[in-house]
Length: 274
Image: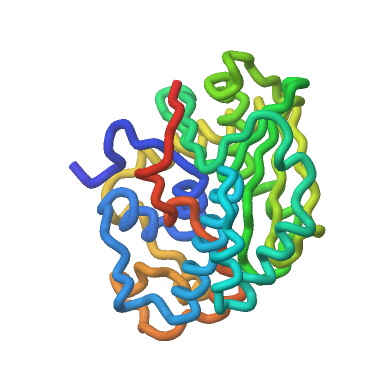
């Protein structure tokens, strides 16, 4: 019997997006569970982008907990990171501090025979019953509203909040029309608009998720997970040495690399599960 996903695997936006980008990367990361061969593949630009994004997320989380991060900001030598923080303080997303706030929280919900996992940067639940999702983006490539609106992240985050948000909302369920998602981009703080939700979109999200997860779960054996033919994907893939792709500096990583939800230390972050 060939290798396949382990029983009880929880699908996230990262795993679904990884499968779409390169099935072999999905196989190595989630089925073989190989460690990232960082010493062989990560360029200085890649590492700098990841560390900068993690640092920004850390500051936002600490600020949300009421901690004073001014000393850390003043001591920071990275001018771009300081610029991001200035944007966050001066041009924050609307409603970020309204209602009950949860920062860096995981939430899972069942869907058919599968489970879906969302890892939120911040959630807020207002007195009027609305739930807002906030996600921080830190790449330097100009973001496109349509790309974010159609992404697996948008599908997963809104679906999971509707299905499981009552666990954080005092037992009160959330209707799809009460949920919105705000992508706030540190380099373009006023560019992206909130993304709303509807019952029809929720039904379609459930169907898309169940179909996508089922298709992946049925695959068996390494041959069912071929390499992508997109060499741009390969150039910034930390697993490319396993595919015998020539090792070299990843092209453009410093401009468009976004911190992956799974690169944060989620072992230390609370989780709510149905």
